[in-house]
Length: 445
Ligand code: GDP
Ligand code: GDP
Image (tube, rainbow, N blue to C red; front, side, top):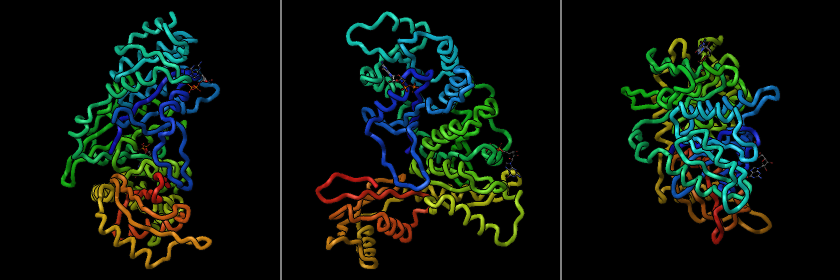
């Protein structure tokens, strides 16, 4: 399931992260204990009135000390305009309307994206302060919402408005037979080149930020393999080369693309090997529960012998140990080597991502697994596994009921996961196991 993206934009210190925390609160999605993957606070899935969306705090983009505020805000705004379905533009009633607020408001309005202007730090109860009304000069279509991020007042109105402006679920459905593919990777890995190769030369070139639309970034492709929408995270980089070098910025952009996708192509530059930034970016796809293919690009540019593929594959899995489920393919965007093969892989992992296994088969697997390797015990207490069901797909999620979740150690969970993979495949997709102790609430692991 791909969720719409809602981005919060605004000057430093207006209260963006306070609002973000207020809204996502404890409703944090499943957090996995993935070594090497850190979850920062920029981005969370959240639900309101039955609609789920991904909330992004663009304030998480690092601001270099010597960067003027306007430049920083322009970066946030470009990103939001490019990737978000709804923008929440936050101002601060105690600071009044600033010149920067006016400038970025214009950018947002030109983009045509729905914007909800919010005035934060309206802490008092009762009538609104006169200063609040000054913000109407920014001229947005939607009414101003008065907010106190600290107290939480106004957040209900804001969430109602967000949900009202989200794209219709029905609109997305019409594209449901398209597989959405995010092409992610560090700058220069070859994302644009591979998309150009896939689409031929006649793709849309994005001209300027104000005119950037979702369609210009997403490109459709229909062929004998299927129907695809490629989400290009290189997008507007041509116009904002410098900003894109800020790592947080490219990571945040990758996050938004991943959220909207079913399948991620994780591009790695063969000439450079697997780097820390690759680990981080691959971690986003894993954490978001998406299907993945690891695409080692520029294979034309490295010196090879018979063992090169094997050696590089080992290097990939050494660095991306949590992603041993993802297939690796060696391509060249430049020469076209194996680029056609990508479609088959995308189709394969997409199917595995959506696969559902019957409870009967799962319980056969469970009793077989328990018979082969005895479950852990501690001081005379034995772990008993009662039964297992698959509770969702994309990614496949399983709930295992047991007598004592403390005894269900990570290593035994890993064993069960491995049995699932050996038996059913699940190639290219993460698997989530939820341990539930009889008579207990669910515990995510
Ligand atoms: P960000 O830089 O936009 O993410 O801003 P923060 O969320 O870090 O908030 C900046 C400062 O404003 C912090 O000291 C917050 O406690 C304060 N703040 C945030 N929201 C409110 C609010 O609604 N009322 C008041 N009085 N202070 C707030
Ligand atoms: P992006 O930043 O990930 O979009 O990367 P680009 O597609 O802009 O490519 C970065 C650089 O790598 C460009 O100079 C490309 O010509 C080069 N490049 C991309 N793919 C290949 C490839 O398969 N082989 C070689 N030798 N160079 C490539």
